[in-house]
Amino acid sequence: MGFAHTINGHTYRFDDLKTLLAKATPARSGDVLAGIAAETEQERMAARMALADVPLRHFLSEAVVPYEDDEVTRLILDSHDPRQFAAVAHLTVGGFRDWLLATEQTAEVLNKLCNGITPEMAAAVSKIMRNQDLILVARKCSVVTRFRNTIGLRGHMSVRLQPNHPTDDAKGILAAVIDGLLYGCGDAVIGINPASDHLPTHIQLLKMLDELRLRFEMPVQSCILTHVTTTLHAIEQGAPVDLVFQSVAGTQKANENFGIHLGLLQEAQDAALSLHRGTVGDNVMYFETGQGSALSAEAHFGVDQQTCEARAYAVARNFAPLLANSVVGFIGPEYLYNGKQILRAGLEDHFCGKLLGLPMGCDICYTNHADADQNDMDSLLTLLGVAGANFIMGVPGADDIMLGYQSTSFHDALYIREVLGLKRAPEFEAWLQRVGITDANGKLSASGSMMNLLPASISQF
Image 1 (cartoon, rainbow, N blue to C red):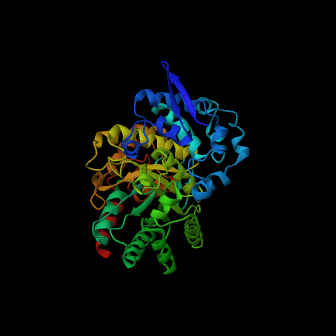
Image 2: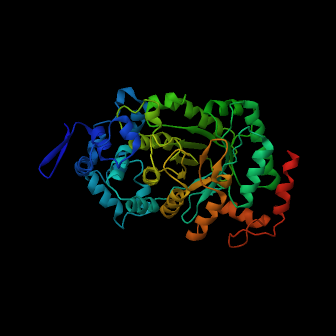
Image 3: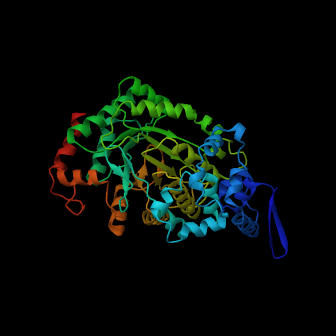
């Protein structure tokens, strides 16, 4: 069928929906690398104008990746809820933007919509929104999850404590964990990216974290961010697994590149649920994504990287995760070239994730060869704090010495809490006060007994 829009007497034509979506995307290096980006700003604006006129119903009849070839497409279309969609079924993409921005669309309204829209609809509307639009709508959305504490309550923001070590040294990891706890971080998860796939080391680290949790009665959850099959082996060997982690992408072929499929993720979720380790809830999955992953695997099928990213959220949503986040600048400048592109992508990812019903956080990060710096991360951190992100990363010094990239620090979490008045997960906040790490107002305290007990525990592991 194709799409067209005329600007100053010149008609721009777009052969199909995936081409239109790609041409309408804000500029980013990954789409240029893929050869699908708009060639001029005039073409980009024409694509946006044409996209704004596309009825939302059209997305149910034209798949950007063929239904018969892709299990992610099948999941998206087979799980679509027409009853929820009815509220917006009469709208175009442009009308949907206006509808989302209207003051009467509250969190309660948006929560009833998330299964009625497809990732492609979410991606499409994001492409015609300004940054402030993405922030405003995402802030309305509220996605609350639970395991040993409650994450995502309005006015709260959690932190993943990320204590990575280049040799998986247990004492080095424990030192970073204690450092983070003393800064009031760790309520999202204490999550280790292991340096190797050595299963006995993973089990040792899980046992260490669980012993620390039990010794100090901490309402936290831990996770080794290894491949899902390794975690399944750990469960089989009786390891104290709280959460199952996996990176996911927006096409079947890209997920196969990760060594996964939907059936495997279902098996992992079932295995984790069978352990009954949660105390206040049973959200047992943790997913990470990132714009460019499908392109880097040559598995994007000509679909722009932001739409592929939104499709990954359908995979994550299907398994009711405790946490989901975009590692927004991690893949490198080939996909998001500079601070401006990283900032825009972070806001897009958070918006699409929340709109689709995900407990969305963000690893606000960049690699050292990107045209970005920590000031860019400060800007994105502040905007995501305003937008209501469920969680961010807490890395010692913001410098991950194992993965070799820059993220946000324990100090950064203190900053965003101070300027926006954001609280921690309530169960974790109560524990911090009980052991004297924070005072009754959530501010760090220097007088608690925990200040001495926690560092002293390093030598016991």
